[in-house]
Length: 225
Image (cartoon, rainbow, N blue to C red):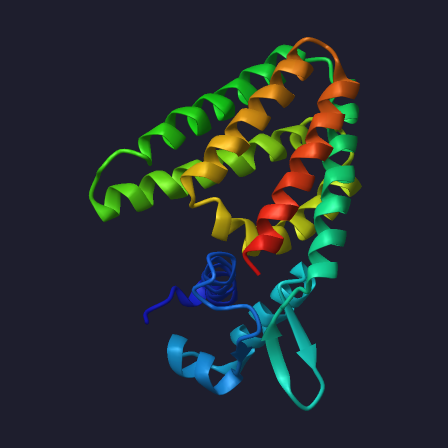
């Protein structure tokens, strides 16, 4: 594999991160320095730097005398993760309510909701595998984007930073059920309900609906473990 030597560690990090989030590298998989050096045809330094960043992201764990493994989460871990993300998303909604440009927030939310609703319908229709995969990945992007919009406008960098790390862990599991038409339809409907409450200025109700949404997503994740 040929890489740009000026940004080796960045490229390796992005490739490994994408493979972990998409489950091309499975939860629990061991990442060895030897195998990664052979895969990327580089020295150990950029590999170590990339693995350090993945450890900071909470996507891999280092075990003394064992090496680096992709995280595995138990049912209890998933319950904690989704419940806490529900709390963080709710806070982001409440903080965003104080932003002066509510029109911009609503425009972005409506765009994300529109894409997930339309693309969700498209994935039910017969199409080639490449087109279906492209639609699914686009759907997942806008589904995630719906949540991230609130962090973009929340005005609290610490809240945003905490959420980014945890959402990475969550994505490993949401990737499974977000490829299913039934789950996509349910998620799109809940996003619409959250958006409508927010647009109507009922920020408390939007936060409550977000919590309910994350609880439902938790049940999808647990059902697939």
